[in-house]
Length: 205
Image 1 (cartoon, one colour):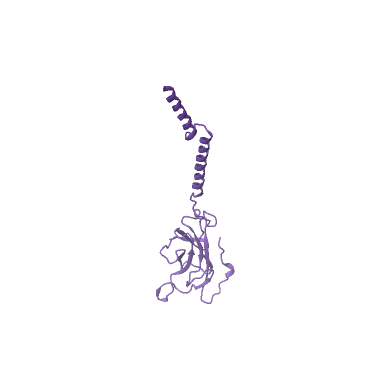
Image 2: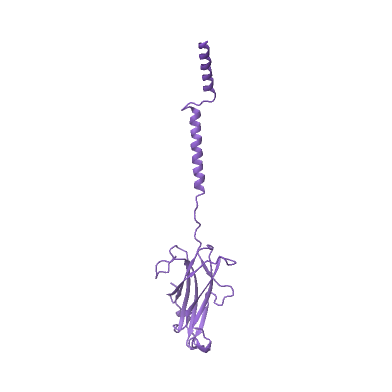
């Protein structure tokens, strides 16, 4: 009787090993490990494909302000015989306006104003997210009239990212190409009939 039970248990053990049990180091176990490793590597590749890369910086450009009174590239004559201020109505400063366009709508910008290649002022050009078109920003500045001598003078506006210029007196942006520019000229005559030679106009650096 005991021998019969032992044989039955032995047979059951053989059947179990042939059915669901997988021995360590068998071909099946190795296949499972290979599939698991491949799945892990594949997931790693997928995650790397979705790594975030910041978009490339879009350089600003300076354009004419729609309906503005100082279109870019124009020559503006002034009569130095007119006394600024007082009842004469001659303004103490000459105002210039432009429109800065930048696809990076939330990026703060910096403007530099030069007169005859000498830096006159630096000013922030903040984002205008509440504007109907936040890609467009209005910028204006004034040039004092009293120090202007007779002759042709260059007015220049350079725009780059905030803190985007190399240390002063450099006019070069830290990132190559990250700059927009605009130019105007002032023809300052001693009288209204004084013809200013435009061949002597300064050239931007």
